[in-house]
Amino acid sequence: MLSKPAKTILHALSYGGVEVEASRRLADIKKLDPIRIFCRRLDAEIYNEDYKIPIRLYFSSQEQMDTVTAAETEAGNVLLFFHGGGWVTESVENYDRVCARMAQSTGCLVISVEYRLAPEYHFPVGLHDCYAVAGALSRGEIFPGLDPKKITVIGDSAGGNLAAAVSMMARDTGEFQVHQQILIYPAVNNCYTEKSEYPSVQENGEDYLLTTKKLEDYLNLYQSAPSDRLNPYFAPILADNFQNLPRTLILTAQYDPLRDEGEAYGEKLKAAGNDVEVHRIQDALHGYFALGIKFLHVQESFEYINHFLTK
Image (cartoon, one colour):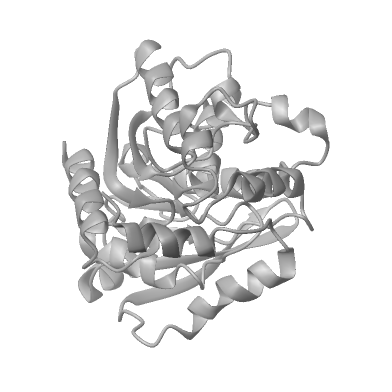
């Protein structure tokens, strides 16, 4: 339960909509991280037609980096990560600590994708960047001989949206298959006004940092036209078919306007016969996953993630 002083502070910080440049400058403060985690990294690029998508690889140990880069063995378990930020802000660099800690906490190789952002690039450009990297990884173009069943797509918030959409698009095209996905407080719906059917939008949409005004602004910046909001690759919960989707772990946060739609998405996947786990992190706010590993909500999340990956 949040204390009264904490609620007062959160209320004071929960204001306004999204001003793109100001929001990006605020997010970029993370680049100045004074306690950056030491982790082996390698930058590379993957083509999406004629565009080079930057990616960053995070190795859990020097041994893993040496064996993988020397092609002495396959990559093992790989987490393909799409960062959050409302499709508008954040970057691989801003999520450097998150992905380094993810590699260390799971023992997996983590690949973070620098997909193109809105409003310079509207839907579905960023999604197609993520899809292109997932396809290249699944086909062995990054690590020859990698078993596609050892690849898990993962993302938080807008990145969770992209992970869900990549999985759905892969199923629909048949070009490759996503076998596992981890969706961390994903944005999977298309409406954050009083018309929303999900109670958490109204309960948590004003006083917990991520406001409904900001969510609507993000959708408007991401879409290329209002009709995009009806596209299941834009809002995966609107899909007509939820069958044959990956084994799934969904983590939601108690004080998050996205909480109920994430949990409802899990129920839709379950009802269609998929293997799904859904866990609500109590007392957590949207965005908690970017906090340090000593934060209890992050520790709890990695317990669920590691259990899911080794189950």
